[in-house]
Image (cartoon, rainbow, N blue to C red):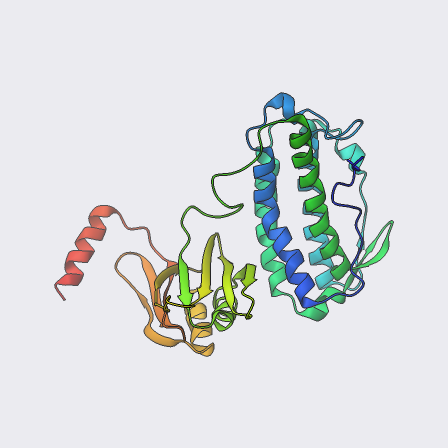
Amino acid sequence: MDDLRYPVGTFTPPSSFSDEGRQASIRDIAALPSQVRTAVAGLTPDQLRHPYRDEGWSVAQVVHHLADSHMNAYVRFKLAATADNPPVVGYDEAAWAKFPDAVSTDLSGSLAILGAVHARWVHFLGSLEPDTFARTFNHSVLGPVPLDRALALYAWHGRHHVAHITGLRARQGWSPAVPYKATGSPDVTPYLVVRTAPPLIDFLKTVFDAVELDRTLREDGSVMNAVMRIGDSWVMMGEAKGPREPFPAMLYVYVPDVDAAYARAIAAGATSVMAPSDLFYGDRNAGVRDTQGNEWWIATHKEDVSPDELQRRASAAKGR
């Protein structure tokens, strides 16, 4: 009989830690909020109250627990990155799971927490140098825990609890949680066909703090498909093969500081199309062309402009 308590197996830390393994764990953490939303999609309040196993938590409790646990995890990572083996206190998960907010069938708060915390967490993780993952926090029960081990643990932890819910759905014959689009995907995603994908992937990481969600290779090692997340959006790309030729695209990207992003792009090998300038429609804009020929129009919004004022300014601009 399958072990309902550990449907993906118990946590076993890697025998050694590598950047490749870290990136895989970060991708798991990035994907979790959407996976949880998909797992509970369409469930009724009675189904959300159903335990995932005899004497186990309800589906709702599992979701609320993930929010509780990963809020703690995010703070622990930040503490470890900024202090020398800082103390962290374990908490009574079973007791937390009994509070009214943790048994409620209204999952909106915990789903929002997961989305927000994981977005910040993944951004933070992507900024760390490899040696930072050797830093530790001092857990009140476990003792010193390296961030490398904690990263692998929380990646497993998300898969572990999603499997509790999806396994229950399968055993109960509840309608499968299959969304109309790939997990986490926005409704519209630009797709770039390029000569060589790895340099562009590195460019997006440098300029826009992009997070690599997936990279699929062909047998010859070329990139069949890569998925990058920039802010709340995705960009996909693949290397041209056979009759398919590379062709340039133009993309418009909002960033907190257009001048800084423009400077990073130029330093990373892009050529300038337009230096940062304040434009009539309320954005400060800059344009660059990457080494693959794609144009990236970078913007920081500076002013809300009414439709009438926008039309007036546009007409004035045309007359110049």
